[in-house]
Length: 251
Image (tube, rainbow, N blue to C red; front, side):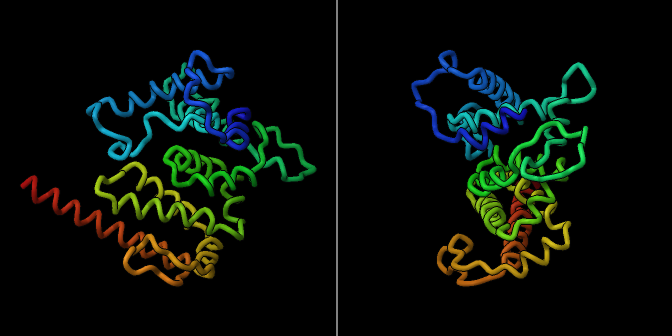
């Protein structure tokens, strides 16, 4: 798990397309590709084969980077619940990883491994609009209290929250409703909003020139908290309208 998390941080360069699974230099490439393919097929088992990534909300064939394949393998191992033992050791390892930059004189025997949370945070800021990255972010802030507290302590938290908010807005506003992705973005925001300091910080942070909320009338200036509220209200409204339309068609 430590090696896979390190790959996410250090190996984001796209691999040549001609590299095939059986020709991969790293065992991670072949394992991740095969396991993710199996996992993707199980997710879309009732889905017609002609559906695209936009309709599913998940990317069946992720971008061929070692980071993306490592991300896929982590999620496959963590979400797979049919191990012989009752405890998923991979999920437990993810829950107990700690920040390598945190200096402490106390030895914690429960720590599974240490990685640089600062580098990982920057990666999530860059890739929060990707479904697999969003899912890993959710797993970490939901299960790993150390990483959640690290995120909440960032003074530049708008670098992470803005892409998540935009993903929520784009998901509900698109012609093909990306349910998995939209709900995941909403849950991440709800988990973070449980913290009082986070709520105060987002309402004190100002963002400017938000051109994706209304393309014909950009928001020149608004607090980050106000933008989150606008997007959440719009999400609830559009979802309610779609449910009414579906009910009318059913009747």
